[in-house]
Image (cartoon, rainbow, N blue to C red; front, side, top):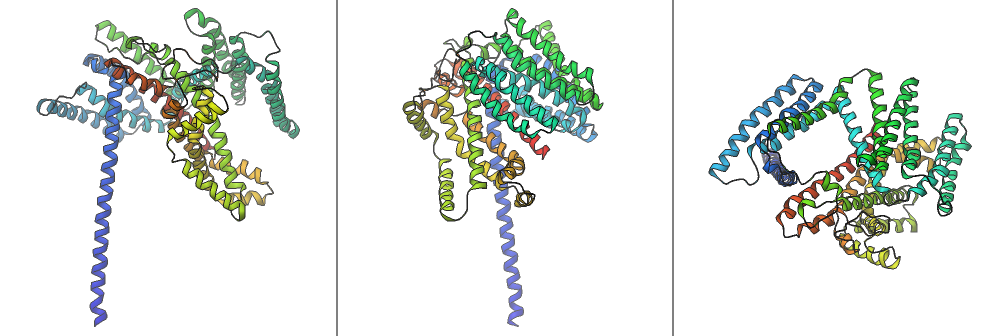
Length: 594
């Protein structure tokens, strides 16, 4: 009887405990969701106002917004719907656009009439940011899943990515000696590539093995001959020989591998001819010839190779019209606005802003020297942190022992690395000031000092993330490689690193995202808040975008504190998104390859 009477009580307690747990879990779930939504909404509102200030959208007339909505946004949405080819998606999106229009107009009008006036916003702008923006992003995602959308976005990505990479490469050559690069390419890179290609084609292992030593020797010889050789070609000829020609040859070989000799000649020859013409004729139209050559080469060759592949597959070729659709929309909108005399905004973020030096006058202020400084710093930081971080993580995970004295030292090192990741950035600034600027004499506020300091800052993050990615590789793969007779290095190179590469890139993306926005370490090492010319070498004093934006925020003029600063923030975000987008594409390519 006692046992029977106790059973319901235990059951009731268990039921009560389960009910209480589910209730608390549900409350916690909704609290977490509410906090996430509140954070995203606050961030979204901040970005909306930054974009409004940067592009002067507060002064955009409803007619101007409607014109570009009809000529640019609607065709893009129609393209994405066509690519998706799903009636359910079409009905859902049309319902959101129509219902959102009514809801936003009514809600916005009601708030301004009965609650408070919303500054620098209209219901049209609110509708574009709150409804049209998310709907366009959703449709772009859904449309990219279809073959037509994948082709269109692939072509658009190559065009935009080629221009961005070309500008970045041209920027790096402002501080790197193009004459050393010319000699190193001619005496080291080209012979090494030739040996490697010959060895792969003829199965000659000796030629493949000799490629790296030949390249290193050629590079060293180039550094020695830099001061010996007195006569060099012009910059345009150097870039033509070292960048445009090899790209054209690679593009032609890729197309030729698909069995089309005529298309191969066109894929390599047309971009090469355009790049040559742009390099030699760019100066006559006010464009820097060498940079124009680099941009056209890095954009044209990948584009022609991609177009040939799409045309050869004969699937989704209509998607190649997406860049033309967007270009026609922009031109048509501009013509309509000009013909009708529609008042247009006067954006702070315009071509002059990214090509001019800072000024005391808001209308003449530019961010060009700071953009160059940030690009140089982040390029050096990416190379240094990736090489050192991945090398350290591989050594700690694959080559150290877990027992004995070595194991204890490894665990101590792991603890210190974890602690270093939590140290404030200003401490790294002091370390960079004392070690690189004072002790090693690399200069105060120079590119090399800034890059080394920020590399130390993000190195613990890079090491920890790379270690986690390496640990995620199953041990069965390692044992299988060992069973095939592979050495430890062969297993690491051919098995572990390819599997861990996507995770390593993810950690590197997060680390670089932190580095590009840091200000405190740059202040500590003596970086200038404002410079009026781009750095000419790695030992030139420079500024960075966060430093220049910080300096502008303290100016008394309202145009600086709102419009100019907002334009700088948008520029920094564009550079950050471009950098992260490139890394994400590499990561996705690696995941696809594995």
